[in-house]
Image (cartoon, rainbow, N blue to C red):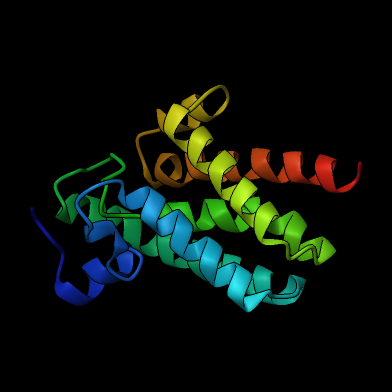
Length: 155
């Protein structure tokens, strides 16, 4: 397994979660769900987290992909894209302040199912051969889960 360097690889791998041998994207999604549930941020804090994660992804994924031998592919060690997707998925929870563990778990399960199965329109983003595709499929999955949660929380 090629790695960029210990510090960068650990960050790309969401604090080492991406280095775990089986389903690193699921581990990263669970880590972010726990962190956001524990933090219970307001909209401003959530937005700042989203911007920070997106900027870091934008700057790091292209270099990490090349260094890890996956020039334009979503390398399993890079899981910051799952973090961005989960942040989007949990936006309705943040907006409405509905910090129910059941809702967070529901969002996590829906997000992982969409990210793994990649139905339309997620499959189109997954085919993009750049960092946009690496992040795009998770972003769309997160937005779809957020829409589902908005509908459920407004019912």
